[in-house]
Amino acid sequence: MKQVLLKAAFFVSATLLLAGLAYASGLRVTGQAGDLNVGVMTDKTPAAGKNIVRVRLTDRSGRPVTDALVRVYWMMPPMGTMPPMKGFADATRSGSEYRAVINLESSGQWHAMVKVKRAGRLLPPMRFDINAE
Image (cartoon, rainbow, N blue to C red; front, side, top):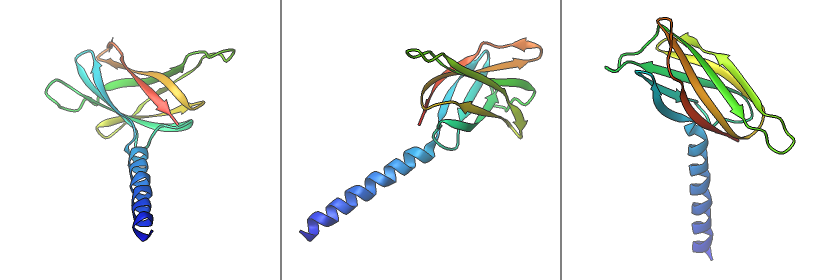
């Protein structure tokens, strides 16, 4: 009986640890905006409400790009009688990355994109999805 309880305690502990790691891991996606590499990150798993999104831009040689204008858009399509929800936030530069606060109105699947303007030129957007808790 003692062995069964120890195994159960180990299983529960391991499950909680993995759930904590998944929660702490946050969002990590990469893609392209024109000729720039784009990395989008959050420190924790996105949830309904305000979330800080960090965007890193690098050129083809891997050097940080700090002379761009960055805007993050998000949208949830209509479901049933609920209208679509959407928003955008201009990112501010902080060191070698850009930060934006996005407000996801509910949990669920959100479509998002990062738009970058550099040297007066709007680059093709980088699209990704956000699963909010």
